[in-house]
Image (tube, rainbow, N blue to C red):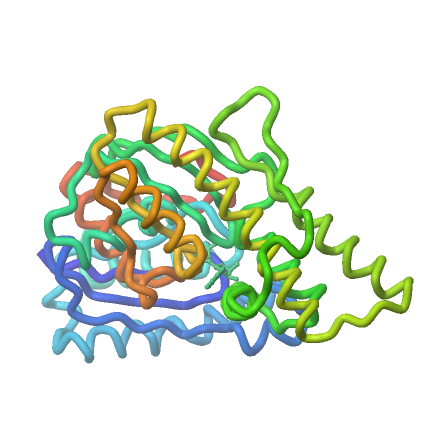
Length: 336
Ligand code: KG4
């Protein structure tokens, strides 16, 4: 079964074709990063307009690269939640029109479920149950996946997502948006014990996260140095990036470790844009090696937003009978 996936929840317009939820036939991503860079972050209204301009071309290109026409597609899967509401509605409206005109079923997909499903495209033997650690620009969650459409959130961030913390820390260090990748490289050159950053623990939950305090600590550290006339040279920036990254990674690994040790869940799956972080990948590899649990990592090409993951999850949603009516709405926030 061939599914055309469409994704437009934030600042990437993407289309992809996937066969049987596992085989990637094509994937096209039009990034808006260069536009939003000017403003240091995503401007929702601009994102919606850019999606409108890109979505037709991206979809045509995904079909061409797969060597297919719309007639060869069995269903159209589209991200309906969560994300920027205008951006989501752009993709959803296009998908509705396409599905209706071509007489194909429309499949609604949750963006976070999609991030997790990216792993099915590269790990043929991966199947639920497993524990998913989702670390992206808009979410940080620990999710128990008991079936392809059976998800239970066990822990989540109470404030900022890990990606948000990376981007804001990067911005105060003068790095261009989105700063995650640059922070990753900078941290490799720095000393992780140079600054005493820590991420908060959440009083009444052992599995929830809180990153806003860590983000503010980095911002305050940089501003205080500026007020005191202390230099923010490349070495200091690298030390701040390394200390910040270490605090963030330690917080995540502590909660994952606690959960793996206390549960019988057989494997850990990493997902989301921050899954590309080399320090997080190394720490989780070390943890899972020590605990003797398999770890599934997405390739760097499928960590950030893309439509291949939406088509992959769309296959399983279709099989579960989850079809969208033409009155389907989009939702900015939604449980998994
Ligand atoms: O998953 P994603 O594309 O967007 C959401 O679905 O939310 O994630 C984007 C986030 C951005 O915050 C970006 O800075 C971060 O992923 N990111 C990274 C790295 N590469 C991308 N963060 C840390 N290290 C990286 N190597």
